[in-house]
Image (cartoon, rainbow, N blue to C red; front, side):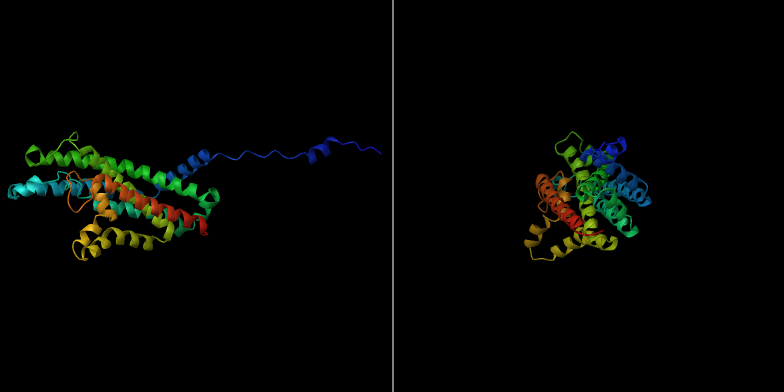
Length: 282
């Protein structure tokens, strides 16, 4: 007996077409938009960025004005080795702390609220998620850092003027130092995001970040000389300071070497954090 396939039977046995999976670039763009929405809708973001701008511009202007007021009392050796951006960027150490705290919160806030499970469900590719978070956060810090550093430079150099060692943006090393100051903030911010991803707890991650940036240099200073000076050069905070310096100080690396050291710290920390993020449950 022959069997006749009805249209219903053919439809039932035919395989259902599967929707094509979205490409990596499309997933990345969607994830980056989501991270941008999270970042700009959190109140702490605005406060941290305002503190960053005030720290760089405000402290830089204050220190530069104080330096001008006592310029006549400086020795010839001090005037000869004067770095015109040393005081203009005197607020960078405080700014890196505000950027660091915000970077930690980029990761730990979702763990605290339990929203990280929804984030992992939406983007199960955790390395891609980490990349999107870092890229979005870095872009924001880069813009804020560049605007702040350029403002601090132009205002502070106007205060110094030609009579107090002021420089122009076209002078050798000036533009590189301004961009280096902003890059310093970006790299510290990425390290903070990585520390937050690895530790998951805000207090613990902030404590580690403050310990590395503030406490560790003080402990290294207690080492016998010249060991303390040699080690201090390679600490993250000192490497970042070298990136925004015009005059080469004995206690700092060259700007290029400082950049490479801080990039190395960033790459290692980010790689370890990504491995931990992939291997650990939410």
